[in-house]
Length: 192
Image 1 (tube, rainbow, N blue to C red):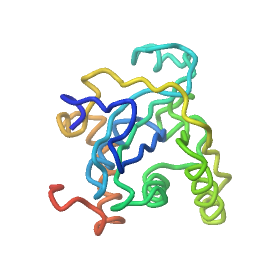
Image 2 (image 1 turned 30 degrees about the vertical axis):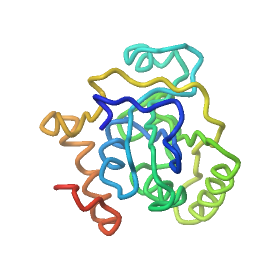
Image 3 (image 1 turned 90 degrees about the vertical axis):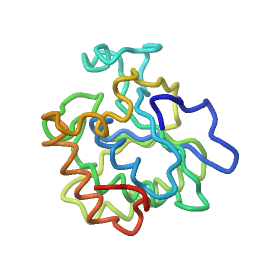
Image 4 (image 1 turned 180 degrees about the horizontal axis):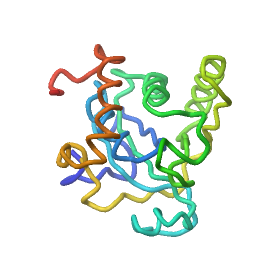
């Protein structure tokens, strides 16, 4: 998927983009790769003021960028609402500028919207979610800024590094939660 063929600047005809940040991009990428209707997922950076940042710069916390995934999906198969429903199950939207032990603005919960319709859907989903979480939803909803693809070694990270410590203890449990909660929405070809 993403390693050999970076996403284009616009989605394929009939497809849409969703750009989401909710902690480490390796976690989000691993989940969305298995979601039916998702054509591709790419890890990247968005929301900051430094052009073409490096991973080291983003991790330093001074660029303003969030680690994000850009998801290309087919709305005839999966809706933007469903993309967001998965998003809110696999990360904690009440944690400000962190997810678990990953701390900093680069790990913030953020939805970068690509259209007015995406803004409307995001607002609806957050309003529906708010009464059911143990705190205030702090997820930012903002127009998509400049987006930069992350370095090649970040693409499909979990798939190629499942035995790495962070993957075993952080990414894998999120993937298990996704598989249990959204079993019917997994790609038929997604293996465990």
